[in-house]
Every structure is written in C-alpha cells, then in structure tokens.
Amino acid sequence: MADKRARKKAEELRSHRWYGVKDMRSFGHRSRTKQMGFTAEDYGGKPVIAIINTWSDMNTCHTHFRQRAEEVKRGVWQAGGFPVELPAVSLGEPIMKPTTMMYRNLLAMECEELLRANPIDGAVLMGGCDKTTPALLMGAISMNLPAIFMPAGPMLRGSWRGQTLGSGTDTWKYWAELKAGNIDEKAWMEIEDGIARSPGTCMTMGTAATMMSLAETLGMTLPGASSIPAPDSRHAHMASATGRRIVEMVWEDLKPSDILTAKSFDNAIVTTMALGGSTNSIIHLVALAGRAGVKLDLDRFDKLSRTTPLIADIRPSGRFLMEDFFYAGGLRATLARLGDRIDGSALTVNGQKLGENYAGAQTYNDDVIRPLNNPLNAEGGLAVLRGNLAPDGCVIKHSAAEPRLLRHSGPALVFSDYNEMAAKVDRDDLEVTPDHVLVLQSAGPLGGPGMPEWGQLPIPKKLLKQGVRDMVRVSDARMSGTSYGACVLHVAPESHVGGPLAFVRTGDTIQLDVPNRKIELKVDEAELNRRKQAWKQKPAIYPRGYGQMFARHVTQANHGCDFDFLHGGSSVPGLAIPDPEIH
Ligand code: FES
Image (cartoon, rainbow, N blue to C red):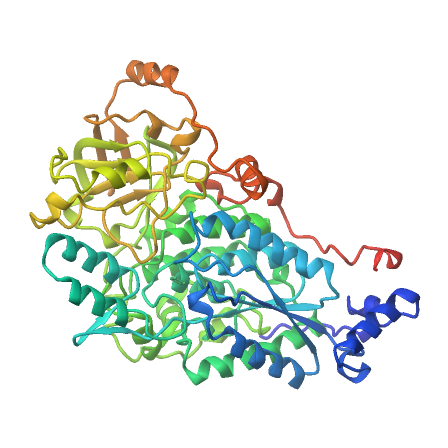
C-alpha cells in the first residue's frame, strides 16, 4: 500500500518564514528574489526546492548536470514548486588529490548547511561520481528535510578494436599488459581515446554504480533511476520526474527519517553482495547508517554476504558493463530476482514500498543478471576478515580475486608508504616471488591522508613479465571499486595510529584464510611488543585548515570514516529557529 500522509498547508512550509510573513526581513527576502526576475506568482506559497548540483569542469562524470538541472527544474515548475540551483563541491574522482575521500565529509557538511541556511523545503541531490552519492545523502539525512537523489547514471560502454572497455578495470588490466610488453604505446593511446566516451560515471560495478544502486535500494531515488545510462533520453525523463516528485514529498512531509531504517540498510547490504559491489560501499553504508541513527557493524556485512549469491555478471567481478545491466532489466530486475532476501516493505521516496516498485520487473538477459540457481558465486562478493593483523576488521573483494590466493601463506614485502612502493616496485633487483604478500603502510584515513585508493598495489614488473597477474596484497588503504585482485583492504586500526599493520616487517609470514575469514601475522607476541615499544607515529601530512579538522575528527574505516561530531540520529534543525533569527 502506498504511504498515505496528511498534506502540509502553505503556511507550514519552512520557506514561509522567509517569504510569507510580514516583517522587514521578509521584505528583504522577497525584494531580493524579485531582483532575480521572479515574482510572487513564481515563489509565493510554493515549496522551495534546492537542486544541489555537483557539476564542475573538474568533474568529468557530471558533464551532463547543467542540462539535467534544467530538466529537474522543469519538473519542479510542472508540479508547482520553486526550484533554486545550489552548486556544491563536485569531487571529481579521477582529478582530486590525494583522494576525494578526504573531501566526502566536506561535501556532506556543505549539503547539510546549504539546506539549513537557506529557505529550503525539499532537495534534489544531483550526484553519482563515487563520493558524491554518500556525501549528499549523509548531509541530507542529517538535515532531514524531504530529499530525493538523482543519480548521474553510468556512461556508455568503452570500445577499442572491437572489444568493450570498462572504466578502471580495463585501465589496470591493459596497464599491466603494457608493462609486461604485451601491448605497445599506440594501442595504449587508442585505449585512452576509447575508454570514456560519454557523460556519466564509471560503467563497471565500481563505487559509483554501486552507490547509485544502493541509493535506490535504500529508497532514496525513483524506481529504476540508478541503472539508466547518463546519455539516454530516459535519464532526462527521470530527472524531470524527480523534480515533480520532490514537490509532492514536501507536501507529504516525507523525510529521510521516514525511509531509512535497519531493514533498508540490510537491503542495501544484500544488494551490494548480489551486485559484486565496491568495497568502498562498506565504509559509506556504515557512515550513512551512523547519520540515520541505525547501528551497523562490519559483521552484518559478512553475515549477509554468506547468504547472498552474486548474480550480476558485471566487471570487475564478471564480464558485462552497466549499459548491459540496464538493457537486462537493471536494478529493479535484480531486486525482483533476489526474492525474499530483500524486505519489500521498506518505504521509498515515491511513497510506495520498495517491493511495489520492483513488482513484476523482468530480466531480459540471464547472462547479465543470472538466475539464483546459476550465480557467478554462491556467496556475495565481499568478505570481512579479522585476526591479529586487523583486530577491528578488514575487507576483501574475493569475487574479483584469483581463487587460488584465497587461502595463502607467504612472506611479507613491506613498503612503508606509497612513495617507497612507487620507487621500488618495478625495479629489476626487487626480491619478490609470486608467493610474497605485498604490504603497504601509511595509507589509511590519517596516514594517507584520506585513505586513498592505493590498495590494489601494482604487481612488480618482473613478475608481470613472468605472467603473474594477481598476488595477495594487504594495506589500510581503500581500492577503486573498478579494481580487482586478492587485495586485503581497510585494515583497522590503521598503521598511522599504531595498528598491528605498522609492525609488519619484510620476511614476516602473513596467513590469509578467506573461507574462515582470518588474517594473521605469524610473529610471536613478545616480538610484536618489542616492535611496538620502538614505534613512533609519523607527523600529520596536512596540518592546517580542513586537513587539520579532518585529522582531529575522522574515524577509522570500521566506523565509516565520518567525523566523530557528525555521528548520531537525525534532527529537524531550522524549524526551531525563532523568526527574528532569520535575516
Ligand atoms: Fe567518476 Fe569513476 S571517475 S565515477
């Protein structure tokens, strides 16, 4: 049954206190809105809808957002709202350094404060490129005004010499082939020209596609929105429909706190596993749950992973790309196929239950979205490991690793930071065998800083030439959702704060046992204690301004890397501010 809610009156709109009252301040608000060419017919008594737009010339995935913002506005006007576009920091994944993860919480704060400080009744959140999705949702959850997410959508398939190319995944693949001497510079340049051929996000099941899918599963997008390729005309239709729907959500007072519950987060975790989603989604879901006041720990991910088959055959775990996924039926078909593993009673932004939104959804290609009795993997794609090397947990995307490495014991080869790794990994005299476990330290939330996507450590060149394409790698870094390999990530606590990873030395034995969810450093307790006594913390890399705030307040990976002062339940700030405070 659709959610039936009492409708608000115009005088109950939050914006009414800026535009609707008779005082000197509201005179200023009205006259200055008229300065922009609008009249009372445009804004009077109407929901004011913020369109938070993460477009910029430095976000290559959001190049269509200027146009999409116009289409969202069209929908808002059609439904009787007043649209206002608010630009926000765009977090272009390939461009920002050291990593967009450093700035996810900044965008979350910006989103929350834009909504708080302005006469906003409801918000359309325009994001998609990796961290923009969790950031906008985190801010909107904390502000808890009616909000709907408009996903950027994936780009079209890449193409090279008759083969399809997937973002990230095929970059790593062909970079290794270039280093091994199997392709030449000309081929590499052709791949550069053909791998990103349209607006939209990475079109593998990377972090962007995963998080957009999870935004939909959480109930925060219109049904089917997350799978539509960015250049498809149906994407523009979806943008206008999103604009129309947010106006109704304001009248219905349908807020994130009405939608997000423990069952919606379980649905999101099950979906991650069925899709072979990005390891980054674990960090983001924990952070989102923290904002929504839902308790979520790493063990929940592992529990649901063990009972959820991986059915989406999409790179990097599988063969296909997001465009194929859309044509095969997309997320709605996937949710329908998951049956009672998904709790269809969860409410969504269109006022319908999640189950109503995907009821009757068909799968049109069983190779792309596989039947439950023929999955890509009997279990979900991600596993949470623990042991003396990671007392607070770490993760591996085992669906995208060579199976022979999932039970492995080998000597560590330790790089104390990224620069040391970059300087040494391709040297011909590097003492390394395929059995070594490559270890990277100083790459966590504080050590990176920002926990960069360095966790897919490069295979040493001398081994690439021998045909080696996967090795066990361990770090406190993240890795791109488009990456693959036996990479143990998010080791917590991180090495920078004195987690056990800081005490690993070259030659120590590391034992990985994914089926039993274990990772152990085979060094006795007394020796580890000696190393701990001799250890000194490295100074912070970016000790001023935002970097200083980040270093003081970011939490470890198992807590979602949110700032400690942003945890907690939702509130309805703004409504409690007395009129004289509105300037
Ligand atoms: Fe934007 Fe991958 S670079 S989604």
